Image (cartoon, rainbow over all chains, first blue to last red; front, side, top):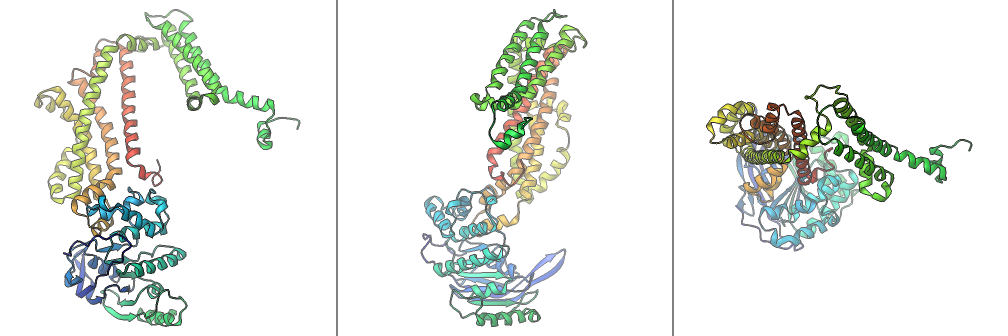
Amino acid sequence: MVAQAAVKPIGHPAVGASIDIGHVSHAFDIDGTKLEVLDDVSLAVEPGEFVALLGPSGCGKSTLLRLVAGLEPPRSGVLREDDIRIKGPHPSRVVVFQDPTLFPWRSVWDNVALGLEAQGILKAQRPRIDAALELVGLSAFRNAYPHQLSGGMAQRVALARALVNDPKVLVLDEPLGKLDSLTRIAMQAELVALWQRKGFTTLLVTHDVEEALVLANRVVVLSDRPARIKADIAVERPHPRHRGDPYLADLRRQILGLLGLEATW
Amino acid sequence: MSTFSLSDVAATGEPSRGGAWVERLRGALPGLGAALAWAAFGVSCLIRDDVGDWSRTQDVAIAAFVIAALILPGTLATDRLGQTGAWLRQRAPWLVVLGLFLTMWELATAKFALLPLPFFPPPQAIVEVYTDDLPKLAESIFASIKLQLGGYIIGATLGFVTGVAIGWSTSIGYWVHPLLRFIGPLPATAWLPIAFFTFPSSWSASTFLIALATGFPVTVLTWSGVASVSSSYYDVARTLGARSSFLVLKVAIPAALPHVFVGLFMGLGASFAVLVVAEMIGVKAGLGWYLQWAQGWAAYANMYAALLVMSLLCSGAITLLFKVRDRVLVWQKGTVKW
């Protein structure tokens, strides 16, 4: 188990951790039949990197993230965070899911406070909640209940709930997948800004090629189930990136080709 | 403008004197009707001698006139009375119906004996119970509340704890499910004969039965509430560093509370039935016992009086539970239709 993350006030750049995925295979038992989802996946993520995992729907990308988060142990292989084996969930690796999954019985403030409360350090660290809400621009909604928020606002609360723990690794499971396209573009920019400011390592699962290219340093393309790594592409462009950049357009064509969709481009 | 109507006033926004007067009269109509209906009740008490011997006829008539006199200014001057006025105005139609009902009741029983006595006592006979038999009635009310409250709190607490335990732990569920399946659907009253000779006192036996009737629905609904909590809530909490105690106390229980309240409501309804039966059969106190006792003496007015109190207590308890729920589940406001 990783040692308890040092408590730092939000705003100080946390240093990202490295993630090492070594020969990981995973399968589910569904009604007695074995369903292979991951097949010998190996991936080394450097501290502070922003890696996007792209793949066809249902290929096992989200399963890989659950393994990184420690929500499930892999059938075989090893996952490490900073060379320490991942054996369970830890607040140094926080997940933001596709659904905001805010707790409807808690106010926005109490939702963001969840992590500190669960770790028993809320009393001493209350200002961090306000800072995290400030960071995502929702201070005015601290007393609102989740059902009073729009989809984008709810996802921003979920982001604040993750960031308040000063994670070393931010695990994003299609967090912008259900947002409308305008909110989505705005939040992509916010995400990049937060990542640059904080320096955490980011693992993003997405099925949106453009999103992956606009955000990540590295795009890892996965095959159909059982997922295997098909390509590992570096995106060497500084942020903020222009969506019409011919370099990105070229990569986009290349990736769509890998996903078997070259004809649509 | 040759003819005049209220819609013209609304359209022009310049109410003439006549229009405003008509509107005021119209607004006061239900209030006037209510005052008249209650006055009619008062008159009906006095028009002729009672067919039986009831001591409170005059008092009831006076009370009816007082109520009529209070309704009249109350509804006419609603603007100046604020909240009370609005409350009164909203209920004026009901007051009309109530006044008329009492009038007919008075005439059909005490004055013309159209309904057979003593099975249908007049209003003054019931009022007489409240004024002249108050100590015994109050004692019964107190005994019922005490018994009900004790049994309900024990049953609800045990049911809640059991529900959370079997919803959370499969090994506890393994042992408790079969018991629940066989014992739960049995009406608690079926235990009555056994309970009354196994327990040291009829009071403890009744408490046990009320707790049983309350506990079953609370257990089942708490359990289903805990079992139906989405696993993604647990995932979120776990990645944020939650231990299992946190998952139970801060995730499972709050998420299950809407179900728990459904169980509490069902348990309350079931426990009323058990309370009354237990009091009628074994316990020598309480409203159920009072009903039984009144029937034994053919004191039908006492029965009606006790029944009225009982219905007020039961609906009061339900209202109280609603208030508690509204407070605890504020966060549901806006997500669920209330």
